[in-house]
Image 1 (cartoon, rainbow, N blue to C red):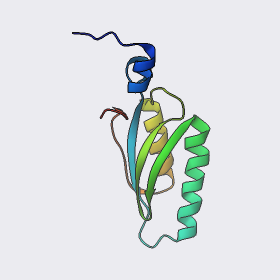
Image 2 (image 1 turned 180 degrees about the vertical axis):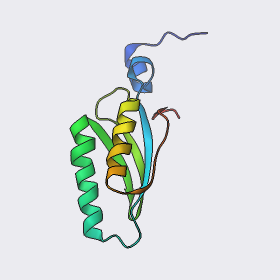
Image 3 (image 1 turned 90 degrees about the vertical axis):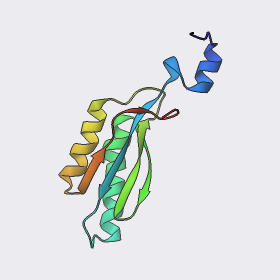
Image 4 (image 1 turned 30 degrees about the horizontal axis):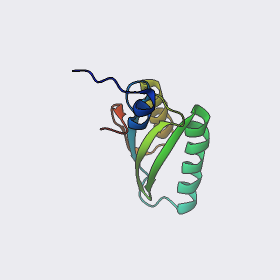
Length: 108
């Protein structure tokens, strides 16, 4: 049975038109990579891929990185976003690059 919820409640619950889809990402820097190279690469990733495409990244790591990518605004990431992230990371010769399928970042 469908529930009738107010717009305010749907927004608070992040459902229907307020649902947000994102994906997780993982990658590994080659063994022995210096801190300066890691910092430069992550900064470039944020500047060139994340912010340039209206995305947000919440992640951490040193040689092994993982995190969540979603839009800066309410909305859905697409498979094009996943492909863009994968292509950029692989072009920098990072290893074990993986992106998950899209999922609801509030409920999955």
